[in-house]
Image (cartoon, rainbow, N blue to C red):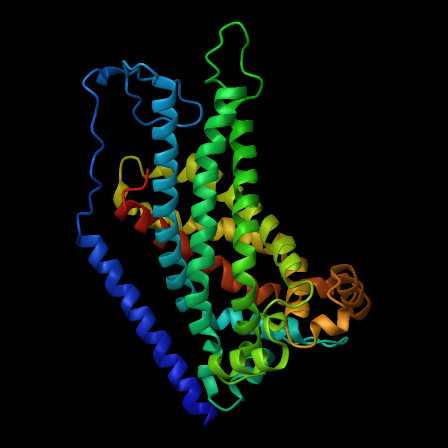
Length: 382
């Protein structure tokens, strides 16, 4: 019975992956176009800024209107919302693709971190433990369905909010403190590079704070499946609801540790990615855009590795708190859980699961950002 359920879950995951692949192919050939906004007749096209980045000295287009500032603010707000929605769709599809490809490493990471006491599991030992269950090698894909489908709204929400905040906060900081102040008597307070860094940090923190609440339930169910507590998503969801109601999906400390891990992870990853993209990817692919996918993959993989390794201690605590018995054992306390982990295995205990996590996160981020940038280009995101 368990084998059939695992096989059914695997077939479902395969169907999801196939649908995503077909969608990718369709988008790559479809010449998606966005309906252009009507350009006012009084707009001087020679002053419209083209290209450039944070440090570009772009000219500002002027429109003859009775209230140009209100019109410009409305257009900027509309543009930020539209770009945020497009990034939501692009990142949601990219997340499902990367989750499907690299699910086994995520399963092994969870199994290693779930072990309590002074003992620890090696990578091969964790693999043998997983495949020895009824269902065999298909257990490496346990929780894939809920992970792929659950990650789409949470990652989509995260990147949508991140994109919107980056555009709005960035423009606000630029016009208030940066080179776009428009005040010759009072020069810029901060450099554009500093404002860019602050914008990314603030946007990543806001985006992940919003997304963390939607991410916890599917993380709890996924990890319960990966540790072998349940044999199917339906069984896990129904049993958890029957035993603890809504509290089962939001264990004590579950949301807070999710935020404690994900916000620093997002900041480290996105700061690294944006820096590598601006200073390496765009420069290396300017003359030959056909190789852009490779540079996107390397940039994403590098950034993901940096963010994953630096936040592995928080990931160990998150796994302990969100798996069955974690809430009651530690009382939902992050500090108590961290103290127990430290007592069990010393400082190195916080690096448990770091190898399979890096083996999962490095290629996962590489795959994610390849798909993400692909879908962004397909949707004509600026």
